Image (cartoon, one colour):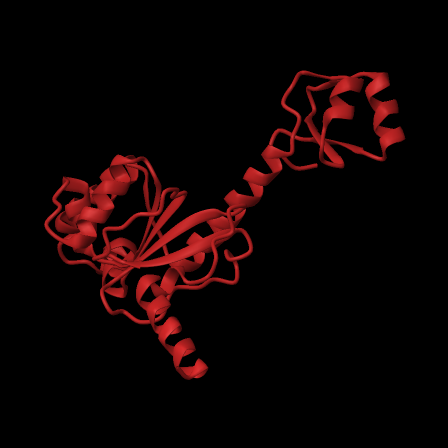
Length: 225
């Protein structure tokens, strides 16, 4: 058989086996962000802000298959219907089923509202004729938030997730003990040892840090210098 023909056949088989959103290799050093789109919505979601620290896996709400590890979930173009049904616990659509599942699993969930949905959430109450109805809808939003669901614009979501990731990295490289000793310095893998202002640093620990070229960084109560 012709080699070019064989290559085309192999590529076609691979396309059918692997979903378009999961063709690229998954970096296991990153956290997994599942992004749900409507059926046949188009291109996979991408973000220059998040791709440095997150594996972005775009899925149709009709796709029931789940990766083994999910760290955050994003619903694009979330509607008022999704909010209300999600708050009540109704699962009569693929989208509401996915939402209910991730809420039950305690995942970090965000819904990006549609333009029409934004008007319900952010409209100036002075311009609304029936504020009783609007307040009723916002109660569903509050209920979802109690379940751990955030409803916010995409740009705000990207900034928050990037910030949370950096804070997580910072915490993972910090020393959590109350007393930093020479042995702690020797065993610390990172070049920077981050401690709180309340941490007691022994003189031998400071000497060990100087000899090994490590830096002891004291953070304030908010985690900054």
